[in-house]
Every structure is written in structure tokens, then in C-alpha cells.
Image 1 (cartoon, rainbow, N blue to C red):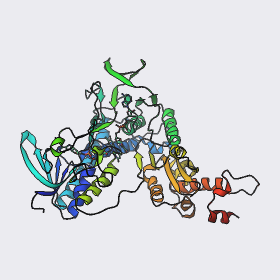
Image 2 (image 1 turned 90 degrees about the vertical axis):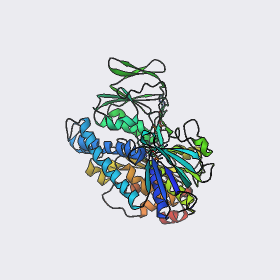
Image 3 (image 1 turned 180 degrees about the vertical axis):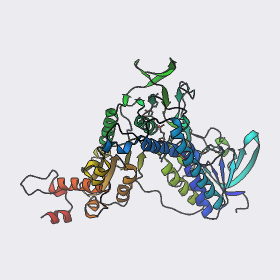
Image 4 (image 1 turned 30 degrees about the vertical axis):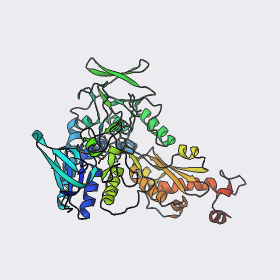
Length: 488
Ligand SMILES: Cc1cc2nc3c(=O)[nH]c(=O)nc-3n(C[C@H](O)[C@H](O)[C@H](O)COP(=O)(O)OP(=O)(O)OC[C@H]3O[C@@H](n4cnc5c(N)ncnc54)[C@H](O)[C@@H]3O)c2cc1C
Ligand SMILES: NC(=O)c1ccc[n+]([C@@H]2O[C@H](COP(=O)([O-])OP(=O)(O)OC[C@H]3O[C@@H](n4cnc5c(N)ncnc54)[C@H](O)[C@@H]3O)[C@@H](O)[C@H]2O)c1
């Protein structure tokens, strides 16, 4: 242990990034303290965000029999009357198992945990204010701020926990509403909207933008939106929420231009903000932006005060549990004097809507903007044997390929297992591989992964000279030399 300070590393926050930072530093033999304001470790990810929402999704898919409807018809149900208690039961078990694993991880790695609100006294000293206002001070050679984020709650939204709620309240609903209005078609809004639509709840999604999920490839979003419209989800896009009133025991969203949208419950998911309000950042020589976020060096995650790092949601984009964990690990390595390379260029997005969406690399819109010569290949899941066995009637995988180098530029998937499948594309992309890898490699059969081969063949067929005199869809000079030779 460093003599001048009580701890080598103090981590504020026990979410994914704080946990990774703490465990990494303890593996280097450092004395580590994690400070957590809640009574259980885990962060947003475990208590109100990632794990609860994904558990809820899995419960809904299982109890409704959603995955079997392609085979047995749309009226197929595993359980006919699903109530909030049915949803809560699995959630309680998953969360208590998860917390147990995390607590054991901390104790076997010798990580100290202090429960209370952390605030800076000076750049190396933190006061921990516990229950009943009891406080103590600790000092650390290095500090990681991993305080995460909280839902953005604008003043004009009348949150009351009954008619108008934010995403934190979605994990403890006492009953399932018959209709739901979701304000905000970002990832959180879309995930909950589609999970509740799978429960036969009437859902309306309102967003001020003309399109939802604007960072996702348009062809994927168009297919996704069409699937949702087909099952009765309503969209009010390009509509800004002005205010909310309660009429006849129901919330009514009043939209710019006079439109009204009514439902039994209104979920507001208009973004999140960094949870820095209680940190007394000025005492550490730091300040946050208007949304509570901190600025860091993109490679080391150091703030302007070099021994203080910030990781996870508190630094803003991309604000994912997956990327937050990596940031925490890299920051701890840097703080402990261990050089690690920066994270690979492309990370995946997994949107756990019903159906799933996952994406890595450039979208078709990106390559068009960059004026790169490209070709796309598509595989429908219903064309894969695994898809047929599982009754998949929708969903597809799209690859984008550079015509000059044949390198894979992007992979975009909507449908079952998208969030797992994406990692095959991610590996090829980050290793700089060409799409021919998918053609030459042998895949397990039957699998959804076969879709990569089908999509790659789709590209290949369009690039390959035909023997019936018809020109190929893509000029032959775009073929790599060794490929052109093979087709002679
Ligand atoms: C509904 C929802 C679904 C999501 N789904 C996904 C998903 O499927 N996949 C994905 O990758 N990401 C998902 N996310 C995002 C993911 O949860 C976050 O990116 C992740 O939790 C951020 O981790 P973090 O370590 O930055 O902080 P957090 O998980 O936010 O944890 C921060 C911790 O710091 C503590 N803290 C704050 N201030 C103080 C203080 N002053 N003193 C002491 N402790 C403090 C908090 O109590 C909290 O426990 C989802 C988020 C939400 C809200
Ligand atoms: N699966 C995942 O990876 C996952 C899941 C959930 C959350 N997250 C993370 O959580 C973060 C927050 O997600 P989010 O969905 O709350 O925020 P967001 O910022 O992504 O989306 C908010 C949406 O609300 C709309 N909006 C805001 N105010 C509005 C108004 N007054 N009227 C109409 N529309 C309005 C915005 O146009 C935007 O589309 C994201 O950054 C995401 O990375 C990730």
C-alpha cells in the first residue's frame, strides 16, 4: 500500500465501470476502496437498467410463448393471464443471484466497500456521508469517478410514480397497464415499448425526431418499424411533447401542434444525465457540463486532474454497460502504471427490443457520406435452416463490403439472436478481414450464423462475371486479383 494515502485506488460507484476498475487494480495487488451510495453494489446496470430490463424481456418472451408463434400461430400463449407478479418473480431471483456473485467477487479480491455518498474534500480526499449523516474521510493516490447516470427529469414533466414514470420505475410496476405511451424513441424507450407490445399492451411511441434509432442502418430500422406497425404499435414521430395532463384517471400527452396521446401509463425516456451533482467536483478542480458529464482523455480516461479518472456513463457517449466495463479496466491499468492498447475501433450496439437489433461498424448511410465504393449482401433468417426450424418469419443480416479492398465495413442485424451473432462480424471487422472469409469458412449447420455465408455469397454473386453474357451487377475490375483468377 502507498504510505501517503489510505488507498492506492478509490472508485466512486459500483456499476460496471467501477467494478472492472476495482477488480483490475486489486489484481495488480493494489489497496482498493469502492464507495457506493446505495445499500447494494451493482449500479444502474444491476438495479434499474441493463439486467432488470433484459430479465423482463426474457420473462415476457418465455411466458407469452413469443418465440414459438412463427410455428403455432399468433394466438399461441404459454400463460394466458400474465400479471406484474409473474414478471417480478424472475427479476427478484436474477438480481439476488447477480448481487451475490458481485459481492463474492469483491470479497475474494480483497476490495473494501464503503456505503455512503462520496464528495470531494480535495483532489486526493473524499468524504463518505453514510446513513444518519455519519461521515468519515478517506484518501486515495488515484481516484476513478464511475458514478454513472440518472434519468433526465425535465421540470415540466409531472413525474408522480403512478401515471407518469421514468425507466427506474419500470422495474417495480405493480400492475401491467392496458396501454402505454412512451415519450422518447431512444434505446430505452424502444426496448420497453416493444417488450410491452409483446405483452399485448397497446403502445404509442412519441419522438421529436422524424426517425427512431438514428444511429442504426436505415434499412434495418425500416424493417423493424414495419414489424412493429404490423403488430399495432403506433408512432408519433416528428412530434415534440409540450406538457402532460391527467384526465379521467389517465395521463394525456399534449404534443406540439395540438395532437393528444392518451394511455393508462406514460413512460418518459428522454435521455439521461451524469450523476455528478453530489460530488463537490470544484474541490477536486473539476467541473461537469450542462448534462452532468465529465471530459476525459479518450485513451487513458484521465480528467484534467491527471490522478482522477472518469469512466462509464458519466463521460457520455456511448453510455453502455459493455463499453463502461472496458473503460474502467483501461483506466485502472493506466492508474497502476500498466500500459494497455486503446479499445478496438469498432464496438457493437445491442438493442434488446423485440425483435433484437445489433450493429457494428459503418452503416450504409456512413459509407455513402464517405463516398466509398461498396456493395451490400443480405440474408433473411427464414432462408437459414435454423430459422426454418425455429419458425423465424422475419429478420435479416446485412453486410457492407468495400468494393476496392473487399474488407468488411459493417454488419447490421434485426431478428432473433442478433446481439450474439454480431460478434462474428465484429471480430472480422476489427481484424481487418475481407468478406471472403465468410464464404471460405465452414459454419456449424444448422445455425443462424450461416446467415453470414449467405450474405457474403449475395455480395460475391453480384461481383462475379456471369456465363450467360449478362454483365455482373458490379464491374469485374472491382474483384480482387486472386478472386478474378478463380472465376476465369
Ligand atoms: C433501462 C436501461 C437499460 C439498459 N440496457 C443496457 C444494455 O442492454 N446493454 C448495455 O450495454 N447497457 C445498457 N444500459 C446502460 C448501462 O446500464 C449503463 O451504461 C451502465 O450501467 C453504466 O455503468 P457505470 O459504471 O457508468 O455506472 P452505473 O451503473 O450507473 O453505476 C453508478 C453507481 O454509482 C453510484 N453513485 C453515484 N453517485 C455516487 C456518489 N456520489 N457516491 C457514491 N456512489 C455514487 C450509484 O449509486 C451507482 O450504483 C441500460 C441502461 C438503462 C437505464
Ligand atoms: N441495449 C442498450 O445498449 C441500451 C439499452 C438502454 C439504454 N442504453 C443507454 O442509455 C442511454 C439513454 O437512453 P435513452 O433512450 O433514455 O436516451 P436517448 O437520448 O438515446 O433517447 C432519447 C429520445 O427521446 C427523444 N426526446 C427527448 N425529449 C423529447 C420530447 N420532449 N418530446 C419527444 N421526444 C423527446 C429524443 O429525440 C431521443 O430520441 C443511451 O445512451 C443508451 O446508450 C443502452
